[in-house]
Figure 1 (cartoon, one colour):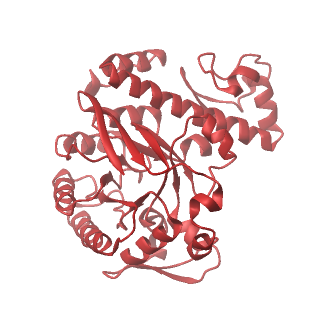
Figure 2 (spheres, helix red, strand yellow):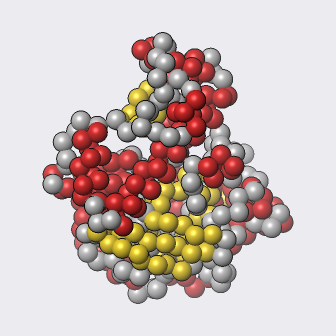
Length: 371
C-alpha cells in the first residue's frame, strides 16, 4: 500500500491509498460485507455507488465457510467476485460481542461458535493466518475490545493486553498485505495516548481507533478523537472502526480520520430507515403510502431517479426482497456521495463551509466543537 496525502484543511485530510488492485480515495467509507457480501447488493451495483473498498468479517468467514476453503478458491477476492481492495477486521470486536461466552487469556480467546457450538480458539497469530488465507489488502491486528463503561484500571489492563497482542501480530505477519494497529484504552485519554505511542513504535502501515462503537455517548467518542488528533503520525492512514452516522463521520473527519466502516447503511435500510440530505426518514411510516416524490430530491442515485416513496413503502410493507435491494442501494449511494462531497471540500479548502451547509440542510445547529 502506498499512502499519498493530497491536501489538508484544518485537521481534515484528503489522501489516496494505492494497492496493486486499485486505488481508494479518502476520506473513504467501506461498506461491510460480513459474510462475503454487502447484504442485498450485487457487486455491479456496489461499484455503481462508487464504492472502492469493502470490509470482510474475519470472525464469521473463519466459521463459515472457513478460511482454508476460501484460500482454495484463491482468496476472498476471487471467492466473492470483488476485484477492488478489501480490508478484513481481526475478530476482536466480534469476540467482545460474545460477552461472557468468550474466555480471554494472555494466549488468546476461547469461545463456542454461535453457529454450531463447537469450541474455537483465536490467538493473535491465528487471526493473522486467517486474514492471510482470506488474502485481504489490509489486515488488522487482533485486539481486546474494551467495553463501555470501563473504569481506568480495567481499561488499562485491556489496552496493555491489546498492545502485547499487536506486537505478536506484527512479528507473525509475513504476507504482502498492509497491517494496521488498533488504538485502545476505553474513554481514558491518557490510555489512548499510551496505546498510540506503543503502536507508533511498532511501525504499522496504518492505525485504527477501536472500541468507539460499543455503546458510548457520541460526546465521549468525540472527546477521545479530539485528544488524539494532534498526535497521529502524518504519513499513514487513520481508520475509525465501526462508525457510523453521517454526523459521526463528519466529526471524525474534522479530527483527521481517513477511513470508516459501518453496517448502518444496509442494516438500517432493511429496517426501513433511509438517509437523505434533509435527515433520516422511515419509509414504513403511513404518511409515505401516497407520496409520489422520490426518497431525496437532491439525490441522483437510480432509486431516487425512478421510484417513489409510495412504491418503496409498498415494497417494504409487503416484505418484497426488492425493498431491501433498492433501499440498501440508496443508503450506500448516499454515504459514498457524502464522502465524495467531503473529499471535494477538503481539496478546495472549504470543509468548514461544507459542515455548515450539511447541518443547515437538516435544520440543526452547528455543534459547539465545529463552530
